[in-house]
Amino acid sequence: MQATRLTLICHARTLAQKQARFPVDEPLEMDWQAARGSRGARFKEASRLLCGPELRTRQTAELFGKPVEVVADLRDCDFGDWRGKRINDLQKNHAESLKDWLADPRSAPHGGESVVQVGERVAAWLKTLEALPGHVLAVTHPFILRAALMHVLQGAAFNLIDVEPLSTIDLQFHGCWRLRLPCSDNEGMS
Image 1 (cartoon, rainbow, N blue to C red):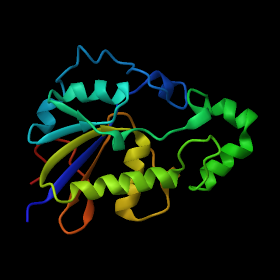
Image 2 (cartoon, one colour):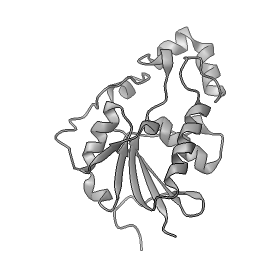
Image 3 (cartoon, one colour):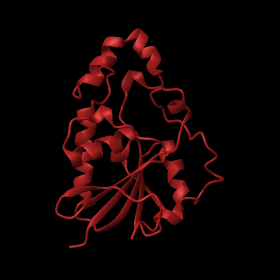
Image 4 (spheres, helix red, strand yellow):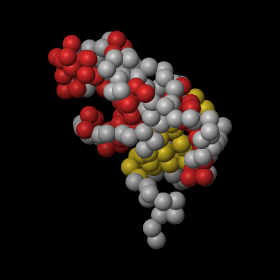
């Protein structure tokens, strides 16, 4: 049985991230057109490239120089009324709601998705990949990377995982999902 390899890639930096705001459908901060295809060599063996529907994930996917398939399940968390709001403003004006949301993964005081709902969506999507052998790249959001990692690790430390722009997580399915920490270079260590 051939394994399924999934490399989750966080989209490149946006102005919302720089300003510590909950995201809207904003573009990348970088000149992605000039960098189109620049990251393709690192993942040339991948058979498919997927991305979330947001502009920032579609633009980041262009960096890999492959045809891309937009997948709705890779969309960011729905932050409801908090979309576009600065975290500092929420700390000042809605401190209890923010505190509840950070402490309770079932909470959704913003009127959007809870962390649990995002996790369930991502777990269902991961299940669809289990029978698809080969290497899949998926450009998505920090919340989706966290949810995938928590599903694989079956843990409860969602808010303790920091996901940097353009960071990756490799997951492999061969009877069960496993986290695969890649080497920093293309060849790896012998």
